Length: 187
Image (tube, rainbow, N blue to C red; front, side, top):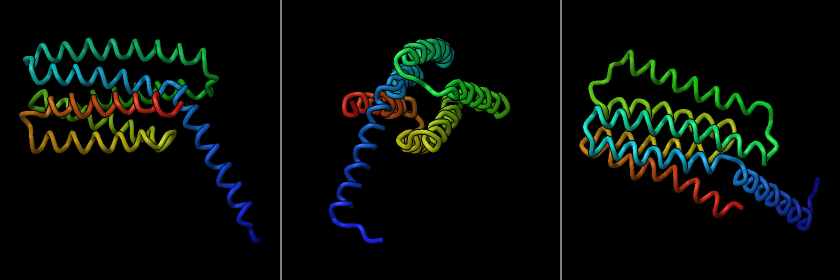
């Protein structure tokens, strides 16, 4: 089957239009808002881990994660009114709930020796979630997950005294600015 130059050009235009529409749909979905929200949670949580004592930092994390979960539910409800969503969306929430329960079980069993070790272990589970979601639904999440995992591993292993600060800026920043970039450029 021979394809003319014009037919190939037209096919490429169709592919580009599908990509543009897919990006627009993602930007109108909740993904960028979740990224920005959890980027802020990570920024302040890890910043607290750098500058507060371990007990106060733990309380701060519990408050921030609780607020993040509530805000995520609010965002999900707001987005679901604006965008027609497939029925499997509730499974995404159940996936994250299961992943966080397994992360907490792993922390309980492993009994990490420091707050940084706990944070690193939970970060690995959360970034595994980003990678899986990226493989299932939206490729850029996988790259964000891999990138933040690399940053977390380098910080934890080679710059442990500044792990929390690195994660506040580069981990939280990566999440926040990825969401911001998508909102600004994919509409």
